[in-house]
Amino acid sequence: MTGSGSSGYLLQTGRNSFRQATTADVDMRLQKDLPVTERFNLELLGEAFNLFNHMNVTSVNSTAYSIGSTGTLTYQAFNPGAGKSNQSGFGAITNADSTFVYSQREIQLGLKLDF
Image 1 (tube, rainbow, N blue to C red):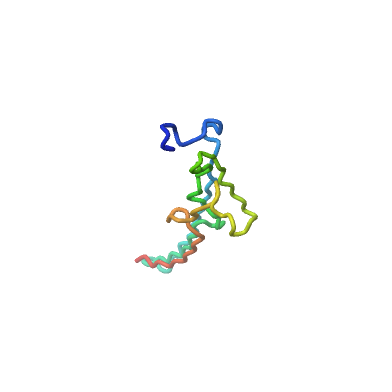
Image 2 (cartoon, one colour):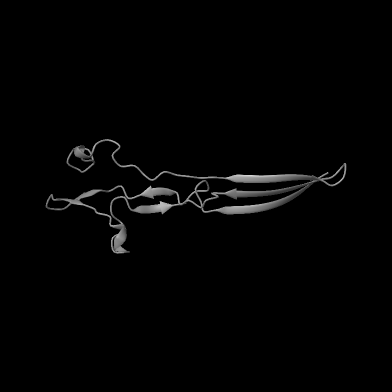
């Protein structure tokens, strides 16, 4: 809400006109069972989470306009090529890879002996 009794968005922009980046997460597991004897079995395994190390955006700045004290409407522009001078405008990434599901690449190896 803007405090003036109206909704907090501009009607001209339309519904669902802004969408976040898509997420991608590829996990893989390789396993090989090796019988040692009739009673013992050796299991080798390797697991990779987020195999392609795709950065998954979990939050972006969704404030496109601000209303000044004089009632002027100002667009909060985001210019990714401007270096660090304007990294907080509309659409700027504010958080990425922040959950367990969407994290950086992780690889683990394991060895298990069944008897």
